[in-house]
Amino acid sequence: MSEPMWGGEQVDLEAYFARIGHQGGTAPTVATLRALHRAHVAAIPFENLDVALGRNVPLDMKSLQDKLVRQRRGGYCYEQNSLLAAVLERLGFAVSARGARNRTRGPGRLPVTHALLVVAVEGEQWLVDAGFGAQGVLEPVALRDSVRVEQGGWTFGIGREDEGITVLKSLRPEGWKDLYAFAPQALYPADFTVMNHYSSTHPLSKFVGQIVAQRHLPGERVTLVRDELTVVRAEGSSDQRTVSVRDLPGILQSVFGIELGPEDSAELVRVYSAGV
Image 1 (spheres, one colour):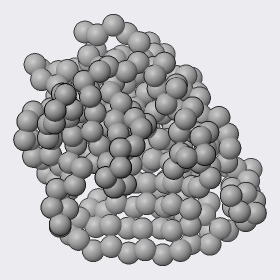
Image 2: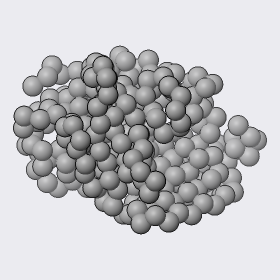
Image 3: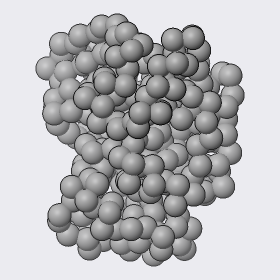
Image 4: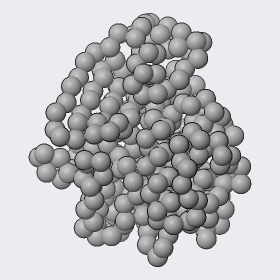
């Protein structure tokens, strides 16, 4: 087992399992990993509301559990995968992290800003990622060349490039599209802290100055960016509509399961009514 570093000893497993609705096994097996991954993705939405409101995004385990578990909020990749890494570490899995370049925004070479996990279990390495939002995987994917898996109506694959680069791909109607690419170099919690600072404060970050919320629903990917709500279905159809600022708190709760208190809801409406 890898050296403990993710704060697994601080995890309230009972509260986490209740949050994601997991009632299955806890032995460090592929079956457990798959069940936890799917339950986590289904229960805890991707969201950047603290960033959008100009707030800090702490990554210590106490703060993560308070926000994602007890307050029933969501988070983005550093939050989601830090929490999941701690849970897996506590259960005896060998967990490491990687940093990836997002390739969904075109051919330009973007900085390494996405954080994912690699878990070694039953003699094989698995890509584990609860933090890529609606386009991400629902379950772990075996890190084998030319792997192709179907998950809930969506198809993913693994590719290899020079210098040990691994690419997660998604099959679209027009063919295979790269989601992100990562090198074999391991990352540590301190690296998450540096990446989190850029993503939550830098003016070039896609998370600064706008709401981003995403969620997997059965057969659907639902995304809110600023005031545009988009639903993409596994069978190929999609819808998009603009929502009013006053409706944002209700949409976040009813569609994404993000529970905001009255003060946070009022602050969200105030900030976005003023323009961000």
